Length: 226
Image: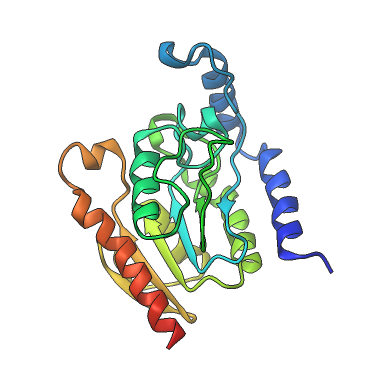
């Protein structure tokens, strides 16, 4: 029987080759080709992105999708953009990462007892995936959760991540709200605003409110040991 690490590697290879959504496939290839001026000398990833982290993780973070010039450029979720900066720092401060910055593959940033994934594996135009595109990606998240058997706490970053998770497991009568949490199937689900510039630069999401989410995650994990 294949180990969980091997199963994840096999799943990630499948994700990288995925072409289920023509609009998204075309868009990420176009972005990788045309680039933006500040990254014009860099080679973009330009393919669907798998999750990454600790195979034995107890904490799972579900984001929306790779950023066009973040993960779609660097080849790693939440890497190379402002959202990634916020996530890396919060993870490091709460002992879920080896360093507080996530800039590029091979930069020494590694997750500890945590795993990062997303509802959508390709950067969508204007960060707005279509419903069918979300549904096409749901089986990948489902498979990750089957492989990551030690997950105890799940943080959903943004409404789409939250609603995708709820739809996947037929969870009803739960409302999204920053800091809200509930129990499901032996796990604790925590809702959070996404650390996008739209939220952080407008003051909708402040640093204290953001890092509180990960402090809560740590508290729930400590309770699960008792």
